[in-house]
Length: 215
Ligand SMILES: [Zn+2]
Image (cartoon, rainbow, N blue to C red; front, top):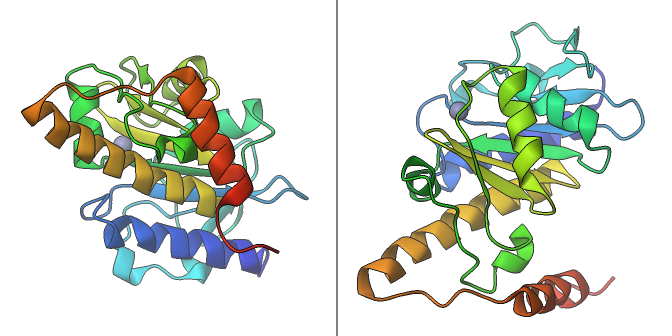
């Protein structure tokens, strides 16, 4: 079986979606791209999370052809591939309908950068216009609006995040929901303070340079 390590990582990241209350039932998906072969490992379509395994993940090439796997890949596969084709720096991608973040997308508001964890996201979360799920159009819209952020919310739909690995994109998806939740509560009791570009840069480099265990 090909790309065993990446299969394991993508499998584990998929499980983190229900573990972190980012999805219900079978919705949501995580993919990861192998830097050597450019092959993409992605969750199969419509399979319950408890039935997933590393072996159940599907491997596709950048044109969407199934290279290895018995199951049909996620309905959002083409969307992931549009992003991978256009962004050689992206090696992981996540899609959820996590409710606090998606509620911003439903009222057509971007999520403002209002906590220091926005340093992990790359600032606020921009908002993309409506495009039906599953096709190239939504991938094009993600690329149009995402800029230097690692996340975007799509009108009337949900969240897409990107990263230098499936694990990073998953971390970002969790942080986006957390920031949206805090924004939601904050807006009940007052007007949130939005971080300035300088502050965003400061907290971003703080995460880049000082976070985690020293090697
Ligand atoms: Zn969706």
